[in-house]
Length: 448
Image (cartoon, rainbow, N blue to C red; front, side, top):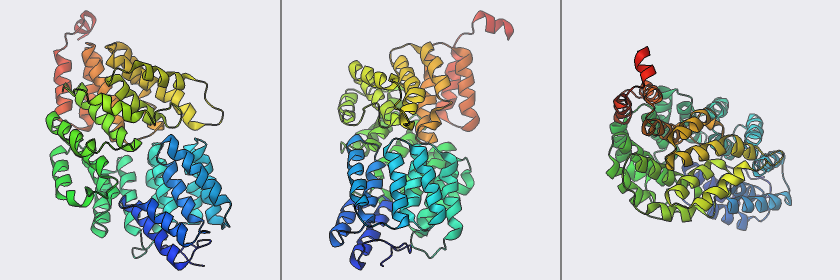
């Protein structure tokens, strides 16, 4: 029976189909090229190749889009009609959990899968992305740490594991090891967009904005090509560096150019666009009518049911575009009784709802209410998706709400909290300066 490049047996494969499947997996690994088209070619070469629909089902299920999830369900049904070995059946079990809205159960299923099949690169990468989408920092690191000793440096895909491990180390705060591991991954495979972005995250977390801009520029040709799926997210990272340096015009130019210029309809790219435009707007820059286009793009994805992290970012666009009816629709969906056995429904109620309410309160000028909602919700926000860099939009909004609400004690405390992590940040220093410009109330002045 033909095997993939990592040595895993594939039911229904032919040598030609196996080679095409390997190319599809590599395209997914590097976020470059056309993995779906290659998987389709593999299925055409071998109609009984079980891993072709399984591979596509992973990609569609991870898209966090209603239409893509529906397509993934069809692919899972197709795979079930084929002859499966134990490894392939194990993939379907994990996908069943994911498509039922249970991200943690799916990720745990792939944890155990990878203990049995440590060279299954698709399972490792899909599990890693599930960890990311559910903000499971520990498993972002440890899923890969468990597998790495089972690999040698000559096995195809080894560098991909290093890049994933780098991101897991970064999300766990192990910045020195994360950067070293990410750079090693790139030395082995310079086109690895995930490894590049892991190093970008380290520089973001450490407030190394000037160095971050230089890092992006020095490798731009390798991560920004037309066939690079991850290019918009990496442009987003560059824009964040500019915002950290209070260079709003430069960040807005990146929004208009490589981030939103192509009008990408993909939810992952829309989330980056919303988070960036929101930061630019609350930093005091005029964003014109950009919210209207972005809000329209969200309409096909924001259902208040599939993935609350996306709904929060859609809510930002609806607020900016003054589409209160759509905001109310999302809030009603979050307030609905959770569907039994659905983890994402619980996320929507417990985390999505207070976050959307808090952002709405901020946008409507109800600053003290925004502080009350966001201060509590941010403590649980890392249970429903995204990276530390992505979730920082919550803390940024919270701090701005405290400042605009004239809450000196809260503002100063939040600014000092941010400065403890990034003491040289111009944005954080300005937050502290603005906080200290707020008059003390009588009780605070007396106690001081």
